[in-house]
Every structure is written in C-alpha cells, then in structure tokens.
Length: 417
Image 1 (cartoon, rainbow, N blue to C red):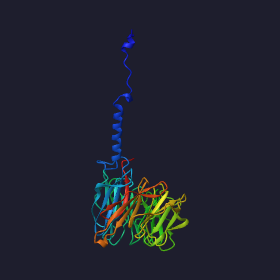
Image 2: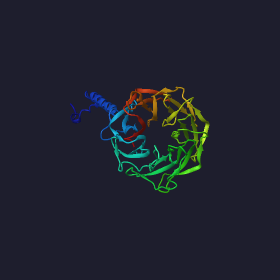
Image 3: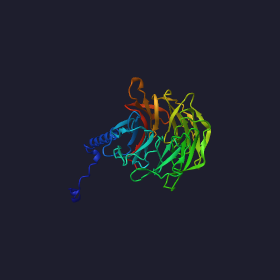
Image 4: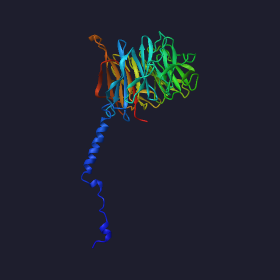
C-alpha cells in the first residue's frame, strides 16, 4: 500500500530540453536572432543607429555644380559601403567641398567649402539616423575677401577650430560652442592670426592635443596648444624652434600625417617623389628619422597617405598616371618600409584615401574624367580589405560608381559608449 507521503508527492518536473517543442523553439529563436544580426548592416536603422554602426560621409561636387554630402553604412561583415537615404546634406551647397570634420563629441559635423575664393564652413548637428541637420547660422563667418583657405581642423578637445589663410600665411581660430556646435571667430589679436609657413594649406593636431603642425613649401611650422589661454583653450604658441626646415623646395605640400601614437610624422609633396619621416619628442619638436626620407620612385607624385588605427601599416596614393596604392610597414621606430605584397591597382585619378575606424577596410575616392565625352566628371569609391599582414585585397564589389566627384571621407561610429 502506498504511504500518505507517496500519495501526495508531485511528479518530478520534466527537463525543458526533453519537451518535444523545445528544440524547435530554440532553432526558431536562433534563426530570428541571426536574421536580425545580418540585417544590422543591410539597411539603415530607423530612429537611431544600432550599436556598432559606422557611418561614412563623403563630400562630393565641384565648382561647376552644387555640392553635397552622401551618407553610407560601413557593412560590418564585408566592409562595403551601403548607400543610405536621405543624404547627409543635400546637393545645394556652393563651391567645392574641401573637407569634412566630425566633432570629437560625435554630435556635430563641419563641411568646408572653397566658394567664390573664400572659405565657407557649414556646421551641422548629426541626427540619430546619421543625417545632418543645419545649425543656425547656416554658415560660420567667412575669411576676408581674397583669402583662400580650403581647410578646417578642430582641436582634439573640440573647443576650437582653425583655418589656414594662404594669402596672408596666417592661422585663424574659431571658438566652438560646446552645446550648439556653432562657430564664432575669436577676437583677432597677435595670437589668433598666428604666422604659418609660406605656402601652408593645412594644420594637423597631434592625437594627444598638445601640439599642432602646418606644412609649407619649405618648412613645417610647429606649435604648442595652450590650455586656458587668452580667449579660452586652443590658442597656439610657436615651439622652439618655431619650424623645421625641409631643406629644399617642397612644392604643392600635402597635410602632415601622424602615427596614432603621435610619436612619428610623415610629410609628402605632390611635387616631390619622397616621403619625409620625423620623430616627435615629448616637447613636440620634430627631428628627422633615419633614414630621413623614403624614395617613391621616378616621377611619383603622391597625393595622400593613410595609416591604420593600430599604427602598423601605411598606404599612399598618387596623381593621375600612377594608378596604384603603395603599402608600407611601419617599424617600431616609425620608419617606413615597403610591404612584400607590393602595390595594388586603384582608380584613375585618386582624390583621397582613408582607413575605417576598425582598421579592417580601406577606401580610395577617385575622379572619373568625362571631359572627352562632353559630360560632367563623375567618380568612384574603391574598396579594399586590410589583411593581418597589411596586404590589400579588393572587396566585392570592388568599387562604387558615383554620379559626382568624391572629395573627402569621414567616419563616425554611433550607438557605442
């Protein structure tokens, strides 16, 4: 006879894994989860960016037609650029877009245009969907008439911005409103109109924010960023010595490129077939590396260099006629040496080169010259994977066809802390 305890005992629970419907439900949930993950980069998220989404912004246009800013999502699985709509900024901006700068706080963007001989900087707020919302006023105060300054750069803390005035060889400072992102010209004095090297067209800030460098046609100006100076942070003061001599004429200088650790710098010129390389001391002063220059070969006309975020590899593009990307390994001391994988083909007329924030993908913006066909110039974006050894391999598709000339590219990672 069963005991009273046995009669009142409940049967033992059935393990969920043994229920007949459990495996099917798990499989369904897994499929749904995979589909959601796969779609994360196939379409632009609505109402905000998903965690880890990287936006790519490409300025495009020219002097003969309005300019705009296109918006893409970087496919996290394959690296290709996926067009997003609407565009970041409509194609109704005057002048050729020279540069796009993302604020360190990731809430604002600035597009520099060289319109009617003067620099115009258009500030934007970046919406949750990655599109640009114009700020008021729609454009920052312009440089004086007759000045040409197709450059804009922000200090790493985002509190000041600088342009380079080529006619007067001076650096001009803007204050950045931390709440609205609006720009205002700081009252001019001897500091705000700081001397720049003759022929300078760019100003680059070291990653740590303590120093800045402007490349001219014969020398590099070097500056200290003064915190809490007159008019607020971001004032520049010349180092001692105030410049580094490049030794010979340096025609058509390109912006200085800094290794991410800020300890090595590289300088190229569209009229010189070498890369000059420098080490940067703790005091910000530059000194030549050994060797001081790396030859690029006869008739090489370098346009721009990009370095991977880990500082291990560098890539160089050239003017029309040299349709290749040259890869380099960056040594422990910062010296460049060509990779064994050798050069790889790219588009006809490269305008810009950039590596995405992950360091896995590289992009080259190229012009397509349609003058012989009596049409407006167009463009392409060539896409590559960066291997563990630094070698490049084309993505699929290898390039995107654009109806306009791409000028510059900038990246923004959204949805992450």
